[in-house]
Image 1 (cartoon, rainbow over the protein chains, first blue to last red):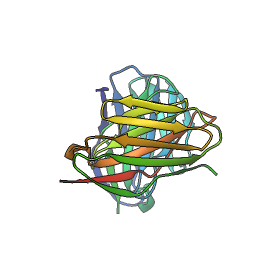
Image 2: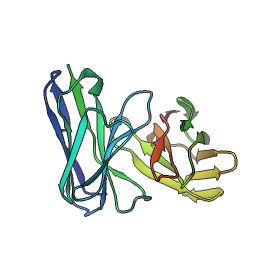
Image 3: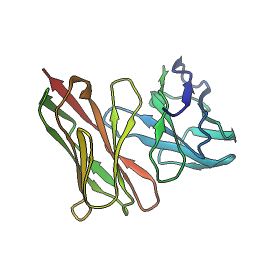
Length: 112
Length: 109
């Protein structure tokens, strides 16, 4: 299995507070992704990275920012959490931009 | 717009065969993926099709028809552990993955 871990796995926070989710990989894969998964929707891409300090927006990037200062870490930040950001967040990695994705265990975020 | 359609839920019997369909309309096509996701867990890769035809991998097979914008995942000799959601995803012309909402498969004894 791909070495990919997410933290925290569960978090409850209040509207307006900042939240950072961390994705850590030990596979040295170039590509890293943040998705959110909500009932009735497919996985939706928030942001992705194709290398250290190289990131780009996905289809639902509003209200989120990311950083990748090291190959192994990809951080997702909600500057001011809103209830609409209550979701399960998955990090994924890939060694090519067309290959299969390996997913982390997910982080369940609840914004009250 | 881009769209992936798959049934929301299906029920099948242990030991039987089930076919999960996926139809897509995307801007270009660079491959179709199937993933399995058990409740509360991460998706895991099952199969990849880029050319028309059937790809077989043990009890699981995946079929693609690019002209029809259609794929199916065939699961044979169903086991209780196959109860999961099955996600269809298409890679578009920009190499972005477009995901269906998933099909929840319930296996009954």
